[in-house]
Length: 246
Image 1 (cartoon, rainbow, N blue to C red):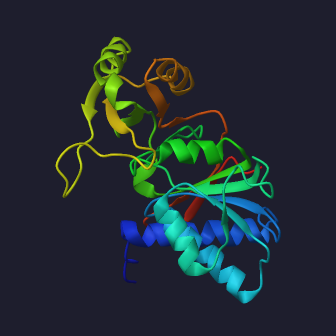
Image 2: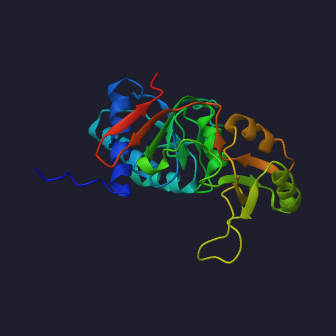
């Protein structure tokens, strides 16, 4: 018998996005009339497309989306999904469900997000959602946070040096994120800059999220601990693991 070909990372992203949306609809977590937060990045985009497919088939109606970036807004506009903000009266500052990718996710469902520099808007959406769902390929599953993928910290540009000094005292090595095909730093959708932070040892995610956000000049960081998500993780063998289903 031939060995089954392992899925590439891109194939895993499509698999987990499609599986998560289908299962959430099947289990009644996503239904017509919902207010849904839609995330950003290469795993979130297939989920947006899958949601649009169900809308086009008539499985879902009257879905109201709140997006986390210009990228997602453009995708929703192209796919015919109406977009609102948290401030719109029809949304009222609260969402039924949000779905997004992650850069790392631990067994206890703590996450790093912000590889696409959208973690401020992602946290605004996902911390104001009754249900938060993370979808990821197998490479994003880790045991601990802090020593691998760098934790992004969005800051006011004029506070860069004092914020770096404060982060150094928390044990972090900080690098200003530079643009690609652009001279100078990455500028976020909110007009700020990003420090990417690394530790020599694993961090306490919940404590570090609060400590970083207490620094004057920090806008938001990419540690997500306060609204534990349902997690779907695709594996190279074509299976999808589910964590924290409730």
